[in-house]
Length: 434
View 1 (cartoon, one colour):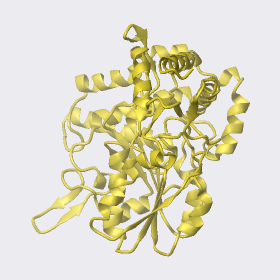
View 2 (tube, rainbow, N blue to C red):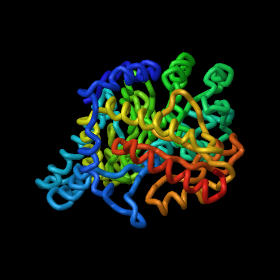
View 3 (tube, rainbow, N blue to C red):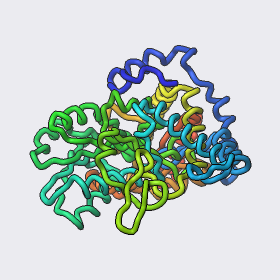
């Protein structure tokens, strides 16, 4: 399934490991064969072959995922957990098997520590809401980072409407590197929680979450890690990482939209109150009192997305067969190649220059507006993301409105990067920048 779970959590070791396997044909992946699994990559846009580099927003789906969705609706569709008939039991078994697949994929200790959500955003909101309701009082402090996605900022601010919680921020430097050395000064006796992104969706910076967790746990502080941009790009072992909570979205790792995962240590999930009320999360209901179900069902009110969970399992099995370490090395090579080739464009400015980075490159060219550049690339069949990437504080720190973001997946190639570079050069000429 995964290679070297323990070691890869040390990013410096991982880079060394990746370099060692770079020329090992046994560890390489067959990109052309993989691309055959994604029919959309044969699509033409404005008469040009599609070059899809918006993977940080969402990935394309392999045939096995699409077929799993279709198969389930056509042959196995029934509401789960409550039915005694054959289809219901069959669907229930598939849903719970998917939970076990997720457990293995991130190496959680128990399947009951895996909560299915609608995605990373809902998973964060669940933890924030349940934690603040039960664990926080006026004057408590929560630490996040300056490079957080809005979904790890706004939920905390919503809680501030009900209680006097102070948000403290770990800054990053001019290269987009998190200043973890400031964490010791930020932590006080009032610090109740630390919530950080593993990989910045705007900068590509890989944060030293293991060090952050170690420092937090030395003070008895729980940590949530936003893994939306890390799970698709590197092996993750939540036990070795020792995260209290780890969250990610299915659609960013070649699975369907509308399904995500919250991993939480059993002790914390037992301690926190439910996020929503309704069917499935109850054990017994009277007009006087409701008792709640056991884990994981306590946090899964209503009909679960049993179609999405099994399709997510298909996606995780797909990338596991390829090997997450293999995917990581392929994408690291793409990032290095793209940075090298784009560097030759006059007036280009990279936003985020961390040495430890993954999955994407953000850039500007002269004073060309990101939207204008992205629109021209679109006409050339090249799909990139433009704007603030739901990380406005990052843009504010750099004094810009947004960036052009090229983000890579397991099916991207160096030839596609050449097409991207040629497109950017063409746009620069159109605007008189070269």
